[in-house]
Each structure stands twice: as C-alpha cells, then as structure tokens.
Image (cartoon, rainbow, N blue to C red):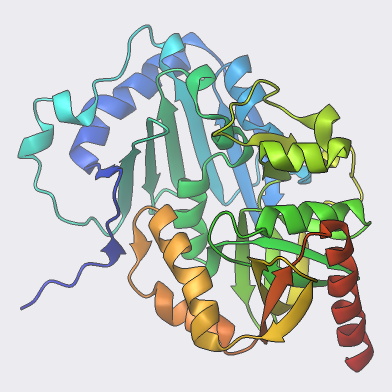
Length: 357
C-alpha cells in the first residue's frame, strides 16, 4: 500500500516527534511552571476562544500586542490553550532536536494527533496536541525573536488549530467597508501591504496585511488574526502618519517596520467581514485600475506563498483554495504611483457591490 502524506514539507523546518516532546519539551515546561506563574489571557479569535499562557512579563509584552484588538473573555472558557515560554525561567537552554540523543532514533512517521516543527529563521519550537487541544511555543530568548514574529505570534499553531474547524489561514491583506471586504493576495513586494495601509488612512476598515483566517459558509468570511502591519523603509517615508506607532524603531534597510494599528485606528481595525472579491496587486508605472483575472491567476497568487510559509500545510489545501475561488470574482489591481488614490478605486468597487446586493 502506498503511503500518502497528509502534510507538505517545506524548507527551513525540522519536523519534531512526540518522543522529543515528551523527553525534552514537556519537562522544560514543567520546570518553568514551578518557577513562575503565567499571565493568562483568553481572546475571541475567528469564532474561537484562544487562551494563551505567557510565562514571564517579557513574553507577554512581546507576544500579546498583536492580539490587542480582540475581545478578552473569561479564562475558564476556551477552545485551545497555548503555552508560550523561553529558557530564562528554567535556567537552561532546551537541547535542540539535532543534538538530543534519542531524536534520530525516533520512528519518523506522521502522528495523526500531534504536530511539531522547529522553524529556522525564527529559531522556535512549535507543537500542537490535537486530542488535548494544547499548543506549545518555545524559543531560547523571546527578546531575540525577529521583529516580524511580534506582529504574527503563534501563526503556525493557529494554522494547525483552525484547520480542524475548516478555518484556513491565507497569505493576504484584507480591507473593506460596511462589512464588505477585498482580499489582496500576491507575492511579497507587489504592493499588498502598501495598498492596505493606504486604505486604513482613507478611513476604510482593516483586517490584515499578511495573514487572514478564511471560513467558507454561505459566504466567504474573513476573520482578523492580528492588528499588526509591516512596512518597508520606503513605505515609512511615503506614510509618515505611521511613524508614531513603529514598534521596532531601529529596523534595518533589509527589514520592515512593525506597526500595531489599533493604537491609532481603534474603530477601523475590525474582527471579521464578508469577502466579495479578490484583488491581485501589481505595481505599474501609470494609473491605478482594475481588470479581470481568471481563477488560475488567482490560484497562483494565493497558493505558493500560503503553502510555503505555513509549516505542515495539509495536502488538500489546493482543493480548499479552489472552492473559495469558485465563489468569488477575481481582478488585477494595477497600482500606479499615486498610491493614495488607490483606496478610491476600491471604495468605488465596494459601493457598487453594496448597491447590487
């Protein structure tokens, strides 16, 4: 019988076995729990109750800000618990998988109820126990995480958890008005974030500039995960209005500034909206305009970056994307030099949708 894997393996990850978790990770967490009481916050995220145990004030300060726009609910009511900690409260670094004696002897098959990866680039361990609905996030020192993690914490764990409820993370920005929204999706550098930020400055609603949770029922619903945005140095120069909320003031030329938008736009950062169209941004030298795109072009905009950036994405994702695309019209959004005029094109499109419906 041919073995058909359920998950897609991508570069910069090492899959982690339940054996390594039980021998190394779980004991380290127990030591941390003896040494410090967690700061517990439970958020309403994408119709689910997400309870996060932050072990240490730094861990809370750094990894909670992106959830600042979500409603906080009682801690005794939750759909998932996520434990987040680093090495500073168990007095030693955790043995990495490749140095742990038993790791290479583990029988490496996919476990239906356990997912675990080490993510290179952010140097974090991420685990999810499906039966217990508990996630685990560990890094040696949370203060050394890349800045972009501050804006999208626990993305891998949430991806695994929401997938069980047919809520799917997609790489894209979402902006809208009057509960109607546009999904902007394309590879990095295509003008997605710049367009989303120009829209919030024009008074439109904002749900995401990077990852959004999508749920398909009678309509396609977008659920905000994070209130953050990322912007290049050129974008900061173009939109000085955001200078006051840059979290990483000393970001380098090859990095992006991280913003937390509900600090200055509390009423415009919204939790959910109905998607009425997909726009594929493209930078052009002339005027901003819309033109029809076909489903294949839209699939090429959504699928590669989503599936490569989400560790252990399930192999049926393409079918899910196809189903979503079949219910939504798709367009190219050619973004011209006058970026501040782009929101007018989008507002005009949405107003016609509201009128037609």
